[in-house]
Length: 321
Ligand SMILES: NC(=O)c1ccc[n+]([C@@H]2O[C@H](COP(=O)([O-])OP(=O)(O)OC[C@H]3O[C@@H](n4cnc5c(N)ncnc54)[C@H](O)[C@@H]3O)[C@@H](O)[C@H]2O)c1
Image (cartoon, rainbow, N blue to C red; front, side):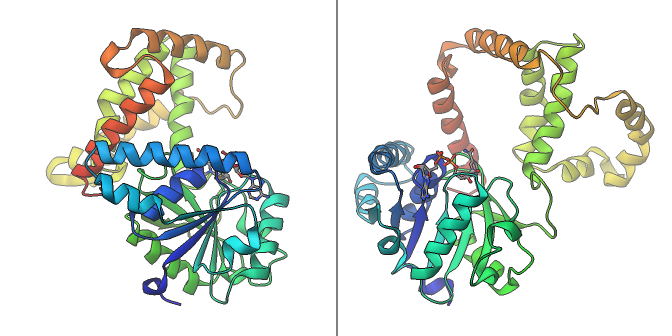
């Protein structure tokens, strides 16, 4: 099977992530069989998909006609056999539990045709375990997206002990055609890559507030208006390459290396959230939300909309939309 033969994708699970994948697939011209065990959830999903399409129309990523045509390529199912029988790729987005993912995979394998890849959206389960009873573990892989899936390009590809490189390459090619940036993990790592980076930063953010160095609002501001703006453009190694001037990353690491080692020695390395942090975080976030300029939103809904507005602009600059 080649990606040029892909026309229809099955998406298993129509929650937050299933909806995001579906929008991504239809916007890129594929048909989608969207399956859920819960019929009312499919109705909720249809409304969310419509809302996301309207957003893309408002942002001039799609035309009104294009959005209507894309929506007409979604087929809703509560029968798994029907949902997968005529597809070339399966994207699983069901609950984050081994037993559920294993039983979805077992059922999918009974009805898909040969060569169909089973890609799980798992945020952290091991592929070897998800595929341990599979008839074709070589066709099973992890494809972890980032929310909102229809906008954020990253997909982390994980392999089980029997996953074949042939299907990893096929999946990567497919995700690239969707406008994604797939990264294949060379070995299994809890939390994969991006979430490990995210929580490494978060630990120090918590530490700084707990030590009284700054407030929740200030630590967020420091991340956003400092390194965060650069991270939207370059990764940490290229940032250092530029920071080192003519000597590049070698120059900066040699220059500030001893200071960095002093900071590291002083930084948090706890493995459990400090007691009281969750309550403190909520109080800090509520204050930060209230202090935001009205134009950039004070409620979760308004701030999500602001985030997506900004994401679209950045993605357009990256030529990802
Ligand atoms: N939420 C995130 O930010 C995020 C990000 C990346 C990956 N993921 C992963 O994506 C997957 C889905 O997460 P989500 O946030 O969309 O969850 P969700 O709870 O919003 O959606 C899960 C959906 O699966 C359906 N479901 C339950 N049992 C099922 C079954 N046997 N067959 C088919 N569908 C079934 C539920 O009805 C629900 O609609 C999880 O593996 C999660 O770890 C989540």
